[in-house]
Amino acid sequence: MGKIFDWIDAKFHVKAPHGGFLQRRLPEGLSYAYCLGGAAFTAYTILLFTGMLLSIYYVPSEHDAYSSILRIQHEVHLGWLIRGMHKWSATILIIFLIGHTLRVFISRAYRPPKELNWVVGVITMVSCFASGFTGYLLPWDQKAYWATEVGTSMAHTIPAIGTYVMYFVRGGIDVDGTTLIRFYSIHVHWLPLGMLALLWMHFHMIKRQGIKRPL
Ligand code: HEM
Image 1 (cartoon, rainbow, N blue to C red):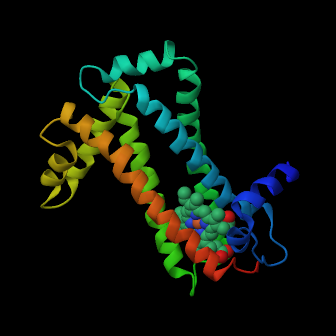
Image 2 (image 1 turned 30 degrees about the horizontal axis):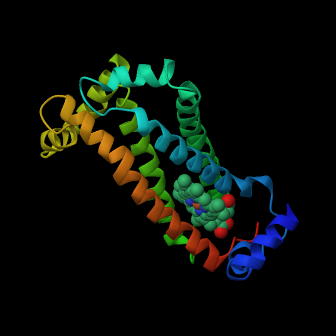
């Protein structure tokens, strides 16, 4: 492996510019709990890749969404595996995220000068929840429909503007084909793009500020 990499490096000189990025100074005494952020990132990478594969066969329309899911599950080669990986990595991501947030909180790494990275982290966490919520509707079965019906109707309880917020999220009075396309767009375009920007900020700050020394 090393010889192959040296040969590639002789042609492309990849080591030199990335040396600073890959080699970091770390404080002593880090435990496995400090790997939870990296584990969450691994789960997120799997989500992105399997999501891109699913989007090849998924049809975001009122009439075809459910049958396209059945096709992915039963007809497409290894479709069941890619769909299962997408669902499980979403669950695992949330578990790792909760663990990572607890680690950061317990080690008091949310305090200055890292308070902005904590804020970026919270927005990232909310984006992950929003990805889960919008993705849940996409199979377009009874469970998905009623979960979205109940979830979006919660917006109704916001004082004064609740009804308008609910109509805005649904794209109309009821959960229908417009809601499906709206959620699909948010799930596959807006949230992943936003998440990539947020994660870039997160990692940039970690690179500049380093990891906090354990207490
Ligand atoms: C997909 C979401 C996230 C990913 C991939 C991620 C990734 C990482 C990684 C790789 C680190 C380096 C140290 C470690 O792994 O523990 C880190 C540090 C940090 N993260 Fe996250 N993180 C995410 C979400 C969050 C959330 C939700 C919060 C807080 C609410 C947060 C706050 C922080 C802070 C403050 C640090 C600096 C910790 C220190 O210096 O000890 N992150 N993150």
